[in-house]
Amino acid sequence: MNRFLLPAGLFALLVAVLFIGIQRAPQKTVIPSALVGKPAPAFQAQRLIGEGRFDPASLRGQWWVMNVWGTWCPECRHEHEMLLEIARSEVLPLVGLNWKDDDQAARAWLDELGDPYDVVAVDRDSRIAIDWGVYGAPETFLIDDRGTVVHRHVGAMTREVWARDFLARLPKKPGVGG
Image (cartoon, rainbow, N blue to C red; front, side):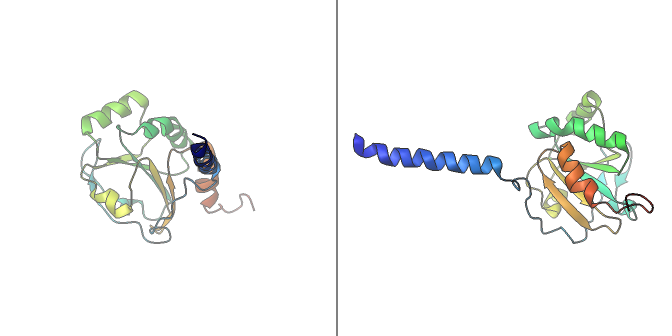
């Protein structure tokens, strides 16, 4: 029996060290994206609400944010209040990409929780998400005025992430903040 205690103890210690390391890792939500520094993938998609299609080329000339979400995603519900706060600030247009979802469920979600998006594009078959390198929701991208992906955040949006990773990357307005 004693011969099993040392290996079991070492295994438990290894598990504990790995768990603590993962929990404290400062970059655990920063996953490198091949898109950062490159043009955002072009697409046209049906709008979840309203008529017609959405084309991000219509946002050329301004910075904007794309948030990938789905009603099936628990973290998307967790971040939703923060997205509403971002929308109220009116700093940047916020585009939602409703991914692998049912349109009726998505509309009901927005009716219930509030709609933070300027527009919601529908991606039922993941073609857009694949082009953007999305593999889980939520994911949020910052796109500059030339249509270049500046940043990608994986996981729920928080005030800290919004300030540190999104607002801090925006160009300074003339006469503001030096």
